[in-house]
Image 1 (cartoon, one colour):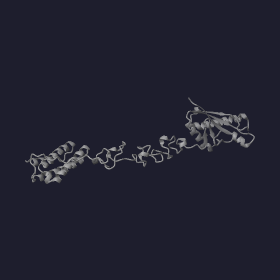
Image 2 (tube, rainbow, N blue to C red):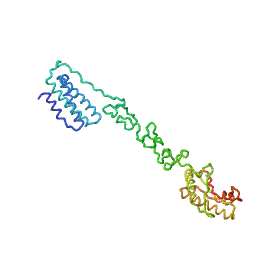
Image 3 (tube, rainbow, N blue to C red):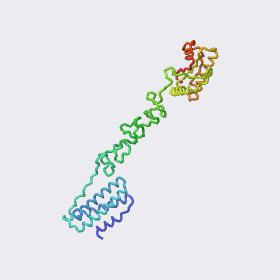
Length: 324
């Protein structure tokens, strides 16, 4: 059997190998076939087949290095076929150089990285666009200007790997108030920046030493029963006290001067205790709150007028020192 025929048989015998080692073996055989074809003058008689075989061998090598075994086998199949054609064509070609002459080296196939991102073009899905190399899907060679695909470009996104809201600069914002959840003290309730994401108070004003009420807590006439129209006000007071978690509170009840002082003092104390109980139910620690009743002893207006008496009937909240 001639050497050419032996090499062709060896190439055919390696077809169908399913592992990288088998592909490497086939690749080595194909390279020898190409070298023999070149020595026999295939570069003159079958230059296209020879060049095609050499190029496919190089592509096979690149695919193997990338771990793409299926693509490597496909390229190698083409290389083997082209090498066989080149060798067969060379049998009838009369060399124009002496047998001892060294054949010219095969053309060098350069490893090209058109966009300069360190990923060679055969492995680069975007060979004309450099990868941004930010640690997010860098292996495909394509830039990812919006990693979390939330519509906010990474350059402007405070949370580039977590989908968020454009108003919150790319960060999650559950309540939609344009304040990112990580900065929002009330992430499930729309609020304002001045309150760190919590709703702005409407019925109270928290001062240094007291909680000022913009409306009164209403009770049933002559009783300590809180009327339902005071629920929004008490809810705001409870919310404020939750934020002032370590501050102690004195709840004071006051009445006007009508009736006996003893009865009024008892009623004012009962109303203060009723407010305290409501706040405990709302989640405020009972140990933080003290309820006292002063009856008519601390008027803030003239008890001789209806307007003055209305002003004197009140509940007040004083903020004391923080608990240790």
